[in-house]
Length: 153
Image 1 (tube, rainbow, N blue to C red):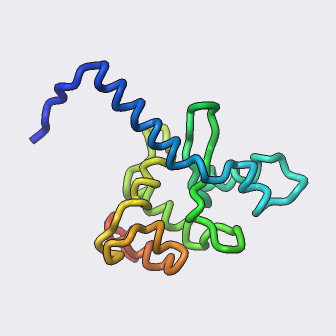
Image 2 (cartoon, helix red, strand yellow; image 1 turned 90 degrees about the vertical axis):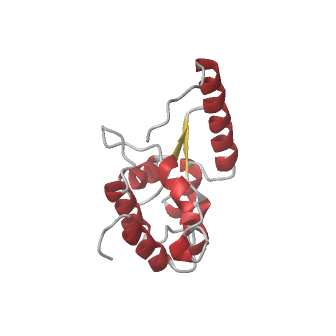
């Protein structure tokens, strides 16, 4: 049964503003594209170029923040201790996006749907979040994603 939305336009605007503030707060400590480039790129590259390329290729998860100035932030939990992305991350993101329908109609994503999956407790990970397990056992996170979204592991 679909419930009818009884919220006024002002209530919806307030809800969207609270969500935007929460996202901004969540991502404030996450590295920018320039910071990602510094620890995984080469010094000669444009400050955002490598991170942007990796995000667009599905090798990194970036989230779009439209305010205060539009930018992409990269959750810290997707990186190993040496600064490189977790090897299985690309495959996990592929499963989430292809099977979990995180893309919009133009095959774009702001990254926030994927982040929600990573920071939500998961029964297949003994109640831990995929973000918590990613650095310890990325294969378990991949298995949880493939099981949840119906793809053979």
